[in-house]
Image 1 (cartoon, rainbow, N blue to C red):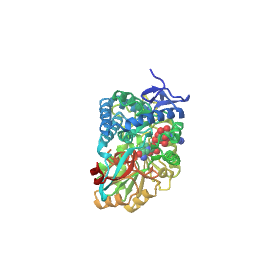
Image 2 (image 1 turned 120 degrees about the vertical axis):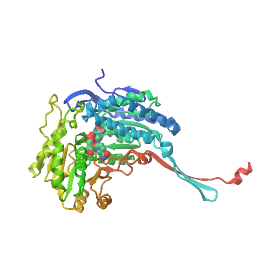
Image 3 (image 1 turned 30 degrees about the vertical axis):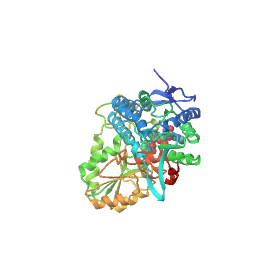
Image 4 (image 1 turned 90 degrees about the vertical axis):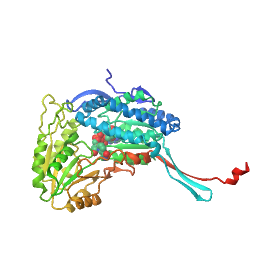
Length: 490
Ligand code: NAD
């Protein structure tokens, strides 16, 4: 059995040239499952070279033929859903159902990217002057790369990769070193597709591997998803090296509840949003902003529902919520809760001491709800990225919007109300890239861009849909003159 994961470069499984190894830990057991290379610049150099050499033939392959490989990818992911989802749950901790749902979102992106022959079409103006036409061609850039985070090991590379290769680029995927097994298995399964060598490569590693991508002159386009500090670093360093970069960062997503909101639906959706994937979703509700007397109706019911959520190993069928990703993450979240308590936060539900029988070494935190949170507190300012919901009470919708707009993040914001006017005002004035109205996790479908504002995103074009197509193509403008007289002479 393989004990060290290998890279996939130029159609072959190869050992990393780096010496250092990292443990991949099952967060439910706290035990190491396998080792992953910490990475080396040589691995990236080899992958970039292979991808660059594969590019001329790949870009000259008609788009209609390139997307045939994507149809095969979709079939493979669907056929092997249970197997892939089980690996994801083992290394990432989320429930089996949540892992399967990720595959659905990945497949949706493949489906949209199958429309590249149409999506890459451009504009043509005839007779901009007599006998002169002007048009735009979209052409691929060369080698693209995706650097992904731990929380969606399957879905996130598919926000970029299918579009990039369907547009005629070749590609390198760098999975998170915390969850490298899932993408490794997907690449093993994709071998049967028969993609030309070098079109799709995977390189494992952490920080040094990212730096090698950022410096490599053969890689002109980079898609990053992860924490804000690293997103900013990747954006700045990539841009300084003349690259095109889109970098999605962290989040602090608020959900506003108006006094007229439907109580049962609102409570159920918010509990799913805050505690699904153990709060480790970039669109998870982490702040509940309750307007006026909605507090009396919402808060007690929410606490009751959160209490009923079962925390445990993600493969156990009746478990609602798995562990957080690492021991460090668990300790960091506990520390933020403790600091909050010292600052006057009221512990409405305490998940810190949850115990899971048979999984005593797992990184579990149960649903936690904090009340009396102020806008200035660390609890509100920090991305907690765990199953912790902070409750802030305000008097008006204006106050709620002002609170959200002052936060440094702008990934998503949701409102629960029966009022169209309140919903419209919220949609119009709130500074966030994804807005939900009576929706808990405002995750855009694959045929919409995955937006993000303020410190949740650095760049202009986002992942998914037409944005991904624009990001992974460059426009060439052509002006042509063809005189009829020239033709008649011959
Ligand atoms: P992370 O920033 O620690 O890691 C992301 C990637 O960057 C990994 O591949 C990692 O190897 C690499 N990396 C880590 N530190 C680095 C460094 N110092 N220099 C260079 N590269 C480095 O993020 P994570 O903990 O894996 O993921 C969670 C974060 O991702 C959260 O902040 C979450 O909000 C965010 N996220 C955002 C979105 C979005 O769409 N905006 C989606 C998912 C996750």
